[in-house]
Image 1 (cartoon, one colour):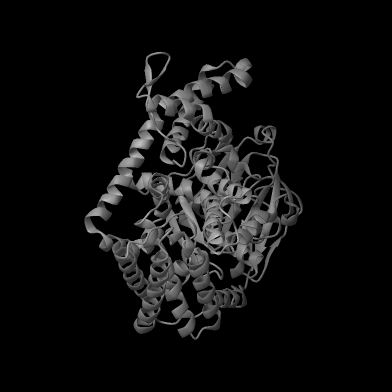
Image 2 (cartoon, rainbow, N blue to C red):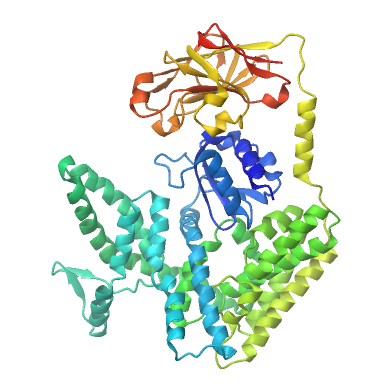
Length: 630
């Protein structure tokens, strides 16, 4: 797979580097925070070879890549060196959500980056079950004890991992957050809280404030609430501490204020919330029995589509920590994953498109053996629609069967065929048979259902798109008279290749020129209208009456100034005449802030012209012709 080509196409189709505020990735998805999602060509992104689908959720523009996501992410970072931190000023999310949806999105977003660590630890736990079973490892030896510690570490210290992830989600200091989690897990704190609880006594802070007993090992919600409050504590302390004392007084006050809040109020509250949520979920299971498992298995793909599947992780962890096993969500998740893999396998067998057969086959393998279903879900079953029905039928059948025979899961590992051992109950060898039959039944039913229901085979969308793009280059606008584009700024004209930014210099966004401005004014270079005026005022997109689409980007990385020193004079939709003032900016203050003021001028629809070239050299004014297109 050509990761570099995929990265370039994705970056171009999401609006270019200047439209990206931050970029992170989870196990299968690129998660963009964009300046303006409205300018993204969704259909072109979907049709990019290597892209399984897209999702817009909680202010993120998510692109599902699958198992190769890290490789594509690496290539994207070469092009843009994107930040993986939460932006200080996140774009407003106009989508209204209720409190429950916001809570689920928050938990899911925090859990997603932690999942690889959980899987790694869980797989070690699987080995601890498998190796003694086949006689390779003794449960009484030092090796077993060391492996046990390795397998349990990520689970016991889960609050620390969650604190790190939550600090990025809420925009707080990562090390303060981790410190609070470590306080909650300190052996001395656990010891004297347990001792007080056993003696039916209450620990009191400052002699009169009671500290409610709660266990924070393996927990998730308490530390999320604590880190959320940390954001406000940091702001408060920052305001009240004198500048000369911030280096030592601020850290002390942050911990002194936040730790009691976490231990006395939010920690116990989070523990109660977690218990209530778990009680509600398992009450449904108690009322409906094995039927509930079948229902969960059947609808689980839609839970994944909503991005809420990671929100169930705290519930599963809590149940395993308290009872030693989980017999509801894990079973439904297992059957759903197996069904997605089986449906994709059926598509791979039946499809006549060679490229798509390979995609479906690799997606099936990923779901069946790695437990990663996004490639199958977004790239195959959801894309073809009818195979999704086959997968839901198979998952429901397997869930009903596994629930009826009371399957239990003893570890949170990747729910795949290779981790069937986590469903084996000690002293009950028949549990392995029931687990194997559940998986087999799910796969067979989903495979047969998909083969019977069928689907409309696909053409290679990206090849089709590339062909259209090639045709558009060949059938360019050749005009009797070339169009001259005036300079939008006064200063020195330079070649685009001289710009100290690879996105512009390599003409990823289009061809054009650049200006080193001497006067802080951007003028309209032709008659037309303002298509996009960025809120920060550092860039403007124009559409001319002649059809030319132009991007004027003031400076390099100046979006980080968040509008400081920029004063837009026009708004999106305004009609402009050549020479009208569009933006005013303070060159000297921008330079003092450490930014390069070199201003790229890009013809965004370069592909529609045979010729796009810089015609000016040296000093230019607003009357000078800078670029010619033909």
